[in-house]
Length: 224
Image 1: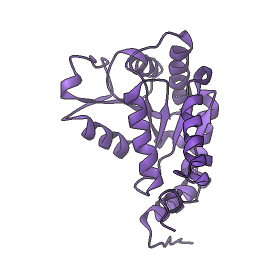
Image 2: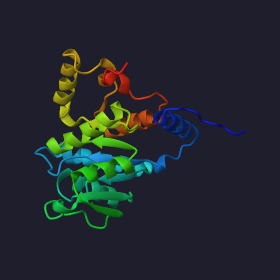
Image 3: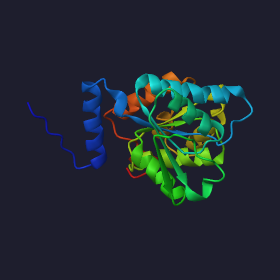
């Protein structure tokens, strides 16, 4: 029996195909997970432990890692641990950062791009979902760009936050404030993905990636 998927909306069609793939196959090895995180390690060992936990989960699920390419901080910890566990790791780094964030050695693939915009575009192109670990402004900028892209219908690639020691509590409080102040609708806030464990977060991301429903792009920007 042949099955024809039809939709006039490309995002809808992609979600339908993904839903059928995920329901009909246990082989999640094709998923590429991009990790956004700090180029510093922070001052709490729990942050490094979380980076290691994410790498271990990727290995246990047969997933691949995409990251910023740099060998410093949580970026380096995540990538090196993943490599040690046999994970395929792709790094993406702008030319001007090579001397500041020396790339991790022996990556499966290292892509050197022109600038930060191309880096983020390539991450979005190559990845199926995104994990956000603790980091600074750059980490949040990357995460928020992907979240916004999902909301307006550019992507269907879920973004999830690993809330180590409540690190992202204030961010989610801000989102709630934005809802309360009338700048963001409730559905978009409710679809935010967060968990305290790497295993729990990846479970949620896979479920979101395979779910048939559309992102809340119309509600988020008032185009009802």
